[in-house]
Image (cartoon, rainbow, N blue to C red; front, side, top):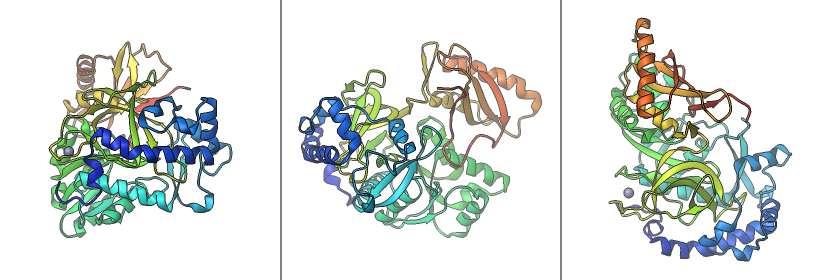
Length: 441
Ligand SMILES: [Zn+2]
């Protein structure tokens, strides 16, 4: 395992060995939560559970789920973090925000120990991803409030990489910065930003290949797992691409190794992951090919630990051995279970549409949004807004619309009404929202 000095012993334990290692941490975390968190004490009491009932992974199933929207509500009622806060406010040394459900960011607190744990786990993920001490990384995530900025920046430093806090926007100046810095560089951003940046380069007459960005580390969107999208970015930039997955409340806990065969879960000793059926909430076995939603429990957290947090990330699990030797389960992201919508009985993920649109490149740029204008059931053809390349003449628009509608209907098995918009209007510098729900929930 290429001289990795980050907790490799935990990454190669069998599932049973790992459960034995984590059980005391889980027991301790549950006791701590029950003693210090008003919110979780009430959850346990209402469910008729005592902390001593939950001392192993299997027993977690009895514990109610935590939904982000419930926690966000508590912040609207005037708390700093909310009634799930455990550590005293004087011990909280950092706060970040996470995309809330109401458009307002939800605040997350971190003690010194929490930050150390975030860095350790983040470094493990970055190492899997192929980042090494000495790599020069330009971090193009938003430093204002969100975790991808400061939090991940610190993980790169913890690993020993050289990281520059670039942030979002100023794309044209970013290209100059890349050109000015000698040698090989790395980009850390969303995959759609790599696509956007290539458009800015094209407008400025800059050849992306001349900038020597050799590694692209991507997070925040599932796009890289869509066939064609990765190849497009690699070809445009001449870079290798590496997928990272994390959620702001818990940290970066999964990454793709050099074999590109799904994301390795690497939260061992920090976070317990469960797979559930998103409709019934029942726990499913972590076996090869199984699909479901990932649910996370922090087991070494002080400020505001979360129990069975629903990620709403819908994945397919892989447990076949990986050539890198890591034993943690791997997964392929199919999409957000909140982004999934059902049209006449067919489950649709934005990634399905992305895959179809890829076949119409370069006439279409591949960027798109789906607009749902009235609440479910979706028994109508939703609007599919797609970007058309600048070099397609208007006289071809109508034929292109017809062709796109026919292809989506044939390959994704649902009807859409296609609307073309100009290149550069959809891809954003933060996460691109693929499904627009234009109705009251
Ligand atoms: Zn591997």
